[in-house]
Image (tube, rainbow, N blue to C red; front, side):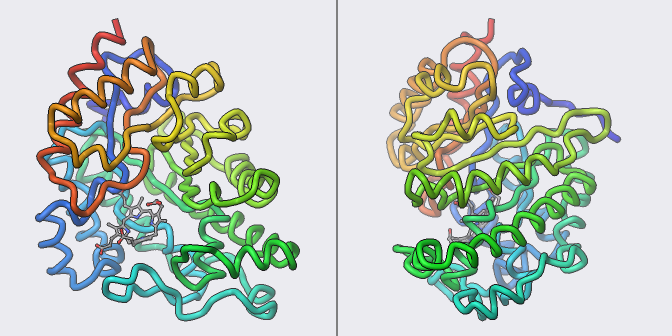
Length: 353
Ligand code: CP3
């Protein structure tokens, strides 16, 4: 295996000394980049990009050609797993993801089986192809959705602004929701381990909708299943630890609990003060985040000031991976993303002496 030329990201996740704070951006390959839109047009569709290892490799590397980012993230989507479970994923133009079949009926829930890994071979082929193309430049992150976040899309049959079907199930038939989460957690564990086998050097679990749950329900229906996944992951590859990042959007109130499920790093959105978060989790985990993605709509000087504020709030020492608190907007200006990356690299050096 090729030696990593820049392992700053992996070191920060393990709270080992670094020269500067590493940065990558959630959804760094995407529609805000004109080169992404051009490749997407050639591929014909978003799923056309995901299912072709050559296209997936091309778009994964695009943001790295523009910005000196410290990590690459597999170009794919969290919804590949429910698709492989037979739900029939499609993207209706301008409407976001949708499934041909949902899991609202008891019979559909009882018939659900873990995704056959052969159906996700295109993802593992993309991981191997990206690793080869990176040639050790920076580490490659693999990922999955959390069982609860995937269940939101599976039960609702697509995106939702109120989650009324899955919440109805949670309160009236918790047994059915637990069955979905159980099958999905089994599937996600195997899926992430296969990404690690194919060459992923860190993995992230995206719990985008766990923060929409009540205080009591979060632990039972989201956190417990992420804990089970983490317990089943391979934690070493090529003689190096494979760090695990868990990110619950809107999960700031549960940081201590999230930090206790076995992950190496906890993702933060922008609503929590990172200095206070650091004090709360102590030495247990590293933190990733917590720049408001919409702060990229400010001027480059304002972006620099906001990055400086977050770096100062985290303070001295390793254990922070700079990132956006959620995905970059398709309307973001790539020049502003460049300003953010430069500011983080430059301003963070003073905290690592
Ligand atoms: O970070 C990266 O660059 C890697 C790629 C990545 C995508 N989706 C590509 C994508 C990752 C890590 C995801 C995760 C994902 N997908 C999440 C969890 C993180 C989050 O954003 O909360 C969720 C909830 C999804 C589900 C999903 N996929 C939605 C809601 C949408 C439509 C919204 C949108 O931005 O259009 C997608 C489509 C999608 N996934 C796009 C990209 C680049 C846009 C598709 C296009 O090109 O039209």
